[in-house]
Image 1 (cartoon, helix red, strand yellow):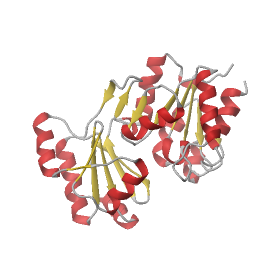
Image 2 (image 1 turned 90 degrees about the vertical axis):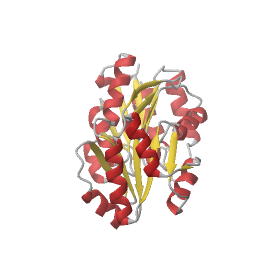
Image 3 (image 1 turned 135 degrees about the horizontal axis):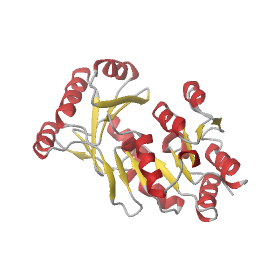
Length: 269
């Protein structure tokens, strides 16, 4: 019997290959873990709910999802278990700095994606996620959220690597968690939200020990959950810094690395 009772998987660069696909091998391994071993498989991502739910349907599983790197957790019936928002004034600061550098800004709240205009960055992200954004005036939205005492769950800034680096250096806001998910993407979440804090909520819900969690990821924003899990797994395509934090390095996302690690540690016992 497997010692692991929950599997937490990042999506982009981990579950999905370079063509943004779930391979047959990975789907089979996940289905076997869920159906035969009774192990819940949790998708943990910076994506919005719409960008995750269709993958659950493709995998033919039901499970809670962790969205916006922990800022929003939904149960298997899509009811909110936990939600964190970025304060409207912080959104205004980020938006102001991004405009100064000519950087694209996307705002995500609940299950909606907001932009000010459809540019090359929004088109690219829309093609990757199969989601169409809503065009709004950010200043109007920010003022509305300020009045409601709410805000976005996530801000995504997209631009050339040199601009992203400049913005990251400029943004010194203690209440925000700011990190590049790749050289052209800067992800911004509430400080108290993290993949680990969200997994901890589900760990308690499922009454599972920390040592019984297997977590796999490929990027810097996955380090916290890789270090937290009983078995932290880095993908073969992960940067060396991420690999050094892991207990095990599996094959790359183009070599069915997720399937390999599930078969090795959850099915061969």
